[in-house]
Length: 620
Image 1: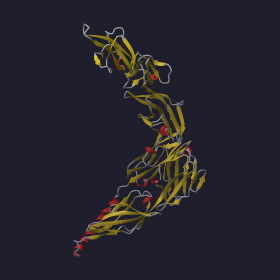
Image 2: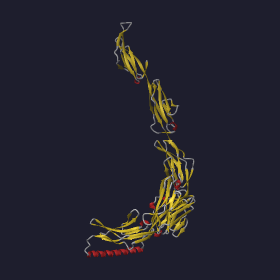
Image 3: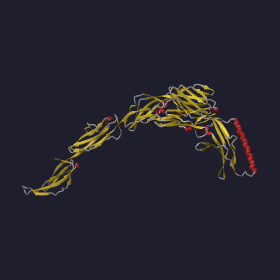
Image 4: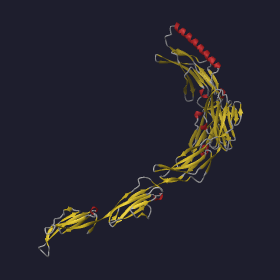
């Protein structure tokens, strides 16, 4: 016998006997038993016991019994039992939720929605955003799982007692990355310093990261350069170094392992004026006299250069030609497309070869130039050695005489303040640019003094002092305009813990020769935003004064003191230091088309110099 009940209801049981039990556990009724005679027979007694019991789902299926105890029973008791059938709302829980990555077409999913209910509940799995059920069974299964199975799933159970609380699980099927598109162009063509854009469209779960990779091919080997880590790549000012094969690489990680896909190649071609790859050439080269030196640079150009020449002083030597100890090789194909190597050989170098050498390259689209400074260290000549030996001998004789004098004067045991005796006869030294210059200081003192050679540099703002050497003899191998000024020798010793010193009369050093652009005063590259005004300034020194100062870019040339559209070159002004001048090119309202190399060309009666600055304008 079974009785149906709803969960959490209070039910009154009326027993016409005595005690009640649930699964053999006695329950004491909350009310006292009543005994009354039957209506039709006063000799027969009716015993009634009332039990109030709150029903919960835990009571489901348990046996409720009432036991009557009386001596008239053969066993002294009699009982009756009933099974409790409790109806309750479904309760759900999930079993089998994945704890590791589920990979597309490789792994299976089996999630069970375990339901506790009475009466039996119907189960429905639904996917968010879809009307049709995903499953009508407790088990939600995909074998194998595919990417389309990803989503938020809800398990819902229902019976006559009501509906369960929905329980949700997110299924996330991982799949390898794939590059869908890198655009329609398989070959991109750009002019030098123009902007170039790449865009990569990919898919994957987890979402992939991106790399833009450039493959550069050379005669020796191929190399790969990473150029960006975003789906979109913008090159604001493209150069020949960006030529080559480009690919997009999409990458994600599944189960701890990296997965990737690489796009079809995009070929980037650049054409325009020549461009000297400045990082391939040293700005300064030092060699010993008599050695052979090779000045090499790599230049890229499309179309191919029609003119490659080296210039120094008043000389010019085209590629494939030779003149005395100078030789320029024919240009040869170098690493990378449209790139060429040019080399100037200088044999049996001497101090007169210390100067600036310029490479000038030109094609149908424009020109480029770059400078390299050669310094030749000249060893001491025999005549110089003889002179030094003679000076040392004279110095020894002077020292002997001084010692004799000190002994006679009873001063040999006393300290003497330092004194500069001589710095030579010349009070004005004149030198040509890059020639050697020597200073010598003769002093006395006890203890023997140390020496400093000090240069005083005068400017419009203030004077400054630069220490140039710490020996009695100072040898400047390649003098420049920066060495012009007032020089003094300072002799110093220490007596009784106090520093004593003496300073010589000044020596004026004057330098004359071809112009020299002070390269440390100018940035090699300048970056500005589109629409801004930029000032390209350089300091140049020259004696005699420059007769021509001009800026060149593309096919345009603008002399100092002139203006052309948004371009203006100021008149040269006196700058810090003797024989030094400031020149400035102003560019107003800059745009991407102004991204290029600008050249300063300076000339006087002794020669010329030039220097380049690269302007990059970041477009909107």
